[in-house]
Length: 493
Image (tube, rainbow, N blue to C red; front, side):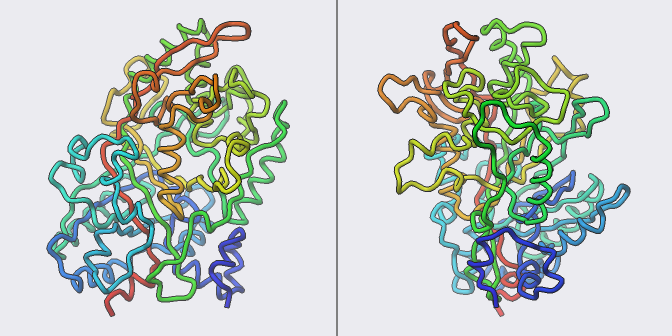
């Protein structure tokens, strides 16, 4: 039999499951949405408390739910058979457990070992520069509610289909002894950036989202390699972005698996409200401060994010491009941050090799901190980003940030604390270096100096100090673990 650690060192060749029983068993026991995003345009997240329930009652509830949990194999096979137009991939259902669920199970289960997971997101508030839990939002995050012990993720192709699933799940849970703390709903948003081009997924600030995703399925890597081969070589760049990552960076052995290939993944959920109108007005103010007018004004927002709204990297171009934007680039042609500032969101959270020369030999590799992101926007209705210019929402929209990883502390918390929130990453440690300031998109905390960054106004011109921060507000969240289906099926037996 294949050893799980060996299997997770190389890209997963999932189609080999037809002839490889070990691969088939692995994919049947792994939950959906980990190896590959579910791809549905609508989601519902139900947050559940087991408060007051005994260990056997919790175990029985998990066993009952296990039959509805979608496997990785089922997701991948369905996606392949429903790839054509007019096909509906059907529901995807996942069950994630918080540390509270394992405490409720007592000696019926072993607690996963990640220290951040065991502590819970509320206890990490200071390290993450999050607002106190008393200042979070409503629903599951209402002050006085306990931290969720579990989360059920429901995804489908229509709002109505998810509504039916939510109503059925909530009705059943309310009779089980568990308590539904709240529900969060996600709705994908799309924009078409060029005539005849595809509608692309965006977040509420209007920028293409989901670029530079780590890939660990061999079939996805083959398609990505073909796409990269068609991209022009990035001018001045000696390296590009390699999308291939070992599955072990996102998947690990489930300590409670009932099979030798039973695996799971840590999962981070955060509700991030976006102040869209304020963000857009700040983009305009930055453009004015830098003397960018007319069509050049879009460069201001592109420098804050690191890409133009259509995904064109600002390090490669002064404006959005008519062709499909490349993703195979580095920052080698911009060592002083004069095209893409060091504080730009994508340069902070995916430095593409820049931090490696500054790391001590014993430090984890830069790429080891990358997560498998699975987020989706939230907010009522479908936005028309061109029609609502000047009347953008000021709240009640945002991103349901979701990501899988093998280490919460080493991946999500590192990215937020050491990269995004750190005013001295990527510059500011060496004598005479001016700090970069915090990430202008997701950076949290910091004093006024940390929230004020230096922005390039053009060749031969002095850098312009300008504060760009506080447009994303954390409204609730928790750490979870996606256990193997075999554990859910047999816990307590």
